[in-house]
Length: 474
Ligand code: SAM
Image (cartoon, rainbow, N blue to C red; front, side, top):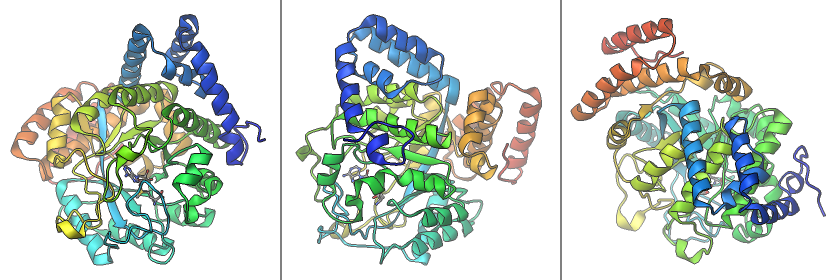
């Protein structure tokens, strides 16, 4: 039997099954212990985070009053650390060739009727121009795992192509990468290609289920997959994005595993995950999400988001268009700091809709609004949509980003950057209605920049953006 050790390099030890089972038993036996629950909430109010055990007790709690306190605290912490900014991005599917057998993903190798597509360099260019014309500055590239069709050289060539395209005032300034677990050497190459975050969802932390859900292909190797973030860090990538696919196994198990993973990275590398994603399983081509028995309802989903927010206050949280407008609205308040908008989950889907018989979507999108509609909606809800990509371009990654976050200086940095990149969006891409709302919002939000000197610089840059200059940042 493996022993629990957050510092271990072995997945069986840092995501230790016995420790998770003990944690869940502890949470069950203490979920009505109001004294302990209040002690945990008091600790959370110190904003230094919670252990997986403490957070699991909060997640298990069924007391209405305490749950309300959890939601209140999550909202407060979201406001304190992230203000009202929401960062926007879009996925870009490069290839759906895949040799794995993931039973929940329509790209699995035995799906013989799904058309397999892989973007050529020219198609990448066209997709990126379409994304730039929407107003996007930040992408997450996605690909199946296939050493022949999608080797690392192909991914690197795509990144290089993406960064090289400047159409009108458009530019993709940050490329995050969501590809299968790979070697330290390949992570080093991704770092050299100047990627933003390396994202890899664990899918499930439950090893036995993992092995069943990934019956064939390289992804079957649970330890290789679970230890991927360690190799990414060894390869020099210090912004990594974790996540589980909710619906595959029991959510409380996944929640504890996710936080243990964050604790492991923090204790070994001194920096936890840059982001946590919270995807939920969706229907897709030959996948019927109803056949998976661990689906979670919207209230549970909201509670998970709130508890993650409290447990890891400095970690950004991402929700995609797997969620509909209503759910996104609810979880935005509780801790989400990044959302996708105007997304297509098919290979080549931004240039042209696919014919019915040749569809390559990875999952059904639940929020089909355009980016402009999403931007406008965010502002009407009181958020500042941000297209900022400054941190990694200024070398603020890993622990340097975390220390900025912890010092509260982010308000003099991220907030101005959000306003300036929103202004660029309004000038170049917004509909007249969105532009009116956005310009008024920027004027109102200037007041919320604490340092007068910074505020004056921003006012100048806003005029320069009106006059045609682009890409200012702190
Ligand atoms: N092939 C890479 C890998 O294995 O990590 C890239 C990931 S894939 C393009 C992005 C993510 O989509 C997967 O990690 C998985 O969590 C999610 N996904 C797969 N099937 C899904 C479904 N039916 N509904 C929702 N999300 C799904």
